[in-house]
Length: 245
Image: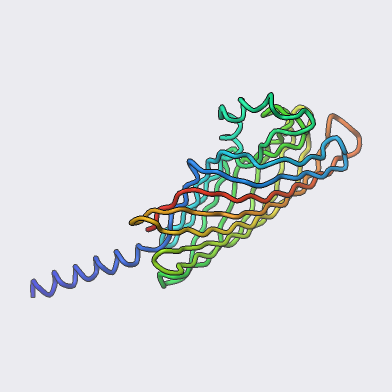
């Protein structure tokens, strides 16, 4: 009888261990990204185009059922020596390469019972920055705003070496006083992110995340009577480390 109980307990533990092998932790700290940011505005002096910020601070994680995401790319880029040392090298007609979360997060729950597939909704809330003021200085012209919204995600395990995710969402933006020059800001945006992770050694590997963002803003610029409208489009390719669960 004791042997049967021990055997049952062992099988239960093994089953739990197998069930927990769902998901991965994509860590873009350290990480790198390549891409572009384009801003088209009704105020021509605010239109711009530039490369995406290079250093990253982003965590994107799914394990068993729960999806969590932390974006601090904007803050990290703004305070790093990398950005400070390159200020003098940026042409005055360009803007600081700053776009991303000050502290923005997501949390979601995936439905499904197999190890291979999960799909579910997620909620988003955070404090994000976009450079809408055409300034080369890190924080001058940066519009900080609250973002709140939601989306859906899907996780797929291809095999023991490859795991993938896709994320799609919509958010609303607002801040009555984003900067000294930008006030009464409102807006909305959509994002699409895909992730492919490949296991190289034991539970560790590399993750690649192509991502597309589109945002629309309305705000009062420098007290002007007519509201400014700006559209932002960004495409980036992120590369970081991953751990398989």
